[in-house]
Image (cartoon, rainbow, N blue to C red; front, side, top):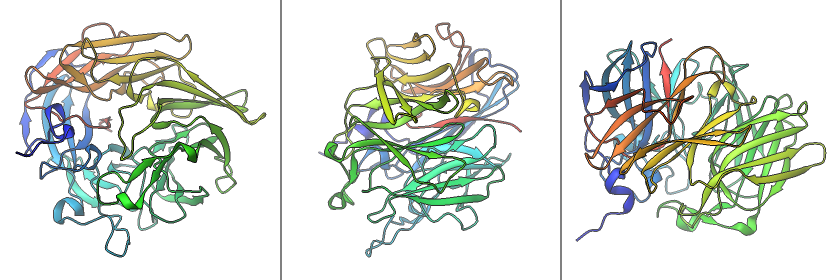
Length: 439
């Protein structure tokens, strides 16, 4: 008898098909000013098998809200060339096919395009027009200018509208390339960054005047290629944070050594003292196992980089096990007081935590036994960055084997949900998403 891997069982198990269901039941009241899509991406192998949780075919799950009603739920696979006809990431000679991949990690909007992302490949554009919702348009390479993969965690500057991102991967240098697209979506900067080895760089951060890279000791191991996640934990490689000035995008990157650790996801970054200090908040993993085993300890940490003295201070801010941190994206690169992260499972079920980075307190919404939230996206309630808003997340209920879209008041997190949209099926545990308001 075949024993399935844990990432193919329970709340992780893939769903077998695509459905569309309208007129969803709601407990509570959806704020009437919300009109748009809540979209979340995640792995859903269409053959119901994958070597690692990170490797399943991308499926986007969307709930459409309009003027206080839950209009519909739909789920669609992202039809990459790997999904449609099994295209491999690399051929027998090691040549990369950047249109191949699973597009399973994030879904973002920039310059009018909705993009499904995975860090090994090009983004895939999705159609969100009425009557075409979540259909795949095709691979997007910025009109032929992008020649590397694209991170699944790009950052949009709220001041300039520019999209900052990077590409990594491959067995040979350059192992890292920094990219920037303007607010119209035109790729304007692509420059290699000198790093000594092919490390797994999942995320990075932006401040008002700098870009912060993370060169951490998860190293590519070509002997593991084709067997799952081809990375090994190598603390002897060291760990460091790289700082690049935004106004000098081709300048040398300045590196700051930190204690070996791994970071999948940053919360945010900003500057103090007229740009002399950079503050970075992130969820720190004390280590990874080979093949990207993620069973180590995780918690919220802060790194303070002093650009005058060349030193860095590392501080643990909380001891709760958490992941998938988010802020109000309108404060990307700017000072922000609050951040949020999720705990999928705990003694009293899962929780969403609100960190007050100014006074050091934490407020939590607990969902109860057997209920596990995913990442919570912040949805603004008005035009004030850092002002009131809601948190949206899919919550899996083990008792019913179904999921809900839960809307919480971010400023009153201990209160009952503002609204719970009851979905017709389970949304498998996944990765990242966004609220895409109608424009």
